[in-house]
Image (cartoon, rainbow, N blue to C red; front, side, top):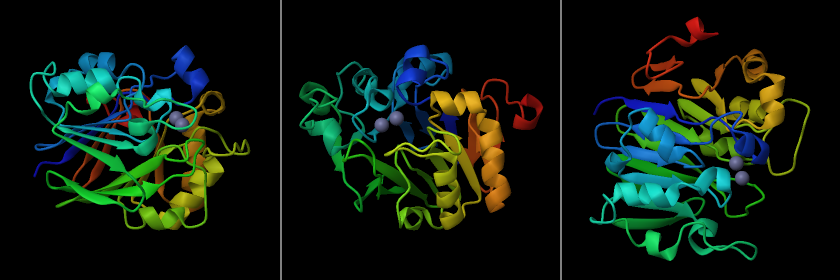
Length: 277
Ligand SMILES: [Zn+2]
Ligand SMILES: [Zn+2]
């Protein structure tokens, strides 16, 4: 199996980052020979996929971690792309319960009409395991303002695991879900010293990284205060405290996940991240 390309189509999170597009909110694309997955397709997912020359019609998996617009708005159009304009029952849709069925406050984030287009639909609840091609996925627990929010851990046959926390606050035991992952992608909305219930700060991320000790940690889904504080500086704080290599994602950033974990500022220019900053 070839290595995995993890492309940060968007690195913004939260309402104000979304409505200002201070950072893009297009989510993450994961591409390997048998897998073409869009994770949390927020506003801009379709447009930035096409901009990055990642044909959305090649998708075979769409994962939506919870029912907030910065995670789901483009899911329906990507389902239409994945099913080749709804002409073929293709691919897998994995989404939290709130996304598929709604909550007391919100309707389902993806219409029932679109939910039946993919070949397979999975309601993701913490602790659940399933397979997408050769990848084993386990659903991790997130504690967020959407109580159904989940994270995902991906076990690859050759290169070990990578994982995505989604929006969550720190809680006792969260590190357990990510123990042994090589690459941990954290949704860090807030900088150090600015706690917000249901969300992650740099201090919370430090505790999760400390508990799980990945080979590399990546901060993404950056909120406005995080952006103003300087995400690279926040990443450095984590690195200094934990000794774990930590980077703050930038829009368009590519991680090659294989025998090594290699970060490039842009997929298009194939530039090294160090040259970029
Ligand atoms: Zn979010
Ligand atoms: Zn959220």
